[in-house]
Image (cartoon, rainbow, N blue to C red; front, side):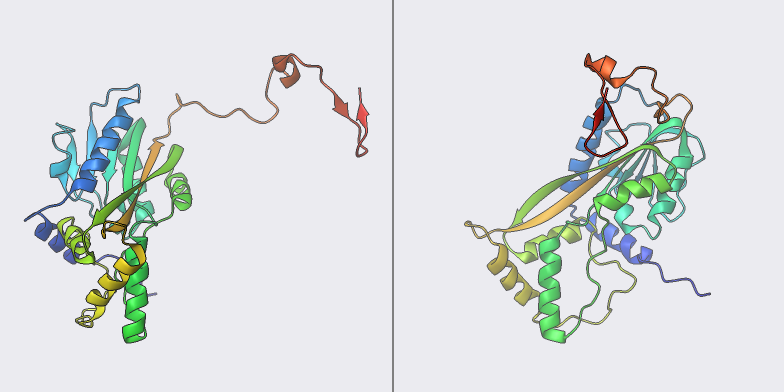
Length: 280
């Protein structure tokens, strides 16, 4: 059986990140790093052996001195049970195997170690995706893959469970960034290394009218009173723990030692087997 092609062209992705470093615009990475630092400050624990999976480790180095930094390759360079904290930093949306990445992070954790991930979610750039699809369909009668598929938050909690994490949590924060034009938005995407690196992308030159027409329609549909256009960014944060015997566990149904009525200080009433009739 022939394996399906990878979602991401890793060579193209690394080239885009190299180009981005010439004049970077990594403010979303900075925002994610600040948010994760705040969340970790609320955890009653000191982490002594952290690891960070990142395409732009320079954003994280000052925040986590002494951490092990590894690129987001298909096979992460992390030793089993070597870390008490693993951060997956805004790269999981490019992964060819997200569950495999999560499993590798879980295996790299010591028992009761913490995993924290952040990635772009499914609502990100929904305005841009809709406009490009509309214009390209009108000009060519079809669509080409231009934006990497991004997961929905409802699916990511299940992925954490599949990867073997205990106490999984997924939550999202939405940011709106405004730009003068679509071309300014596209320039920022290039400066973040977030341009099209899909394996299935079309290599041919797009129609000359595609982006000017998309810019016009974007402004017509979304521009605010000041003429600037919004771009939505959804950042999903994932948290899970490596299983450990010391973690709290839910009690089995029916194992409570105190009745609810006693805890509430009320009289308990039962029900008979027939609908609508109470029994003492």
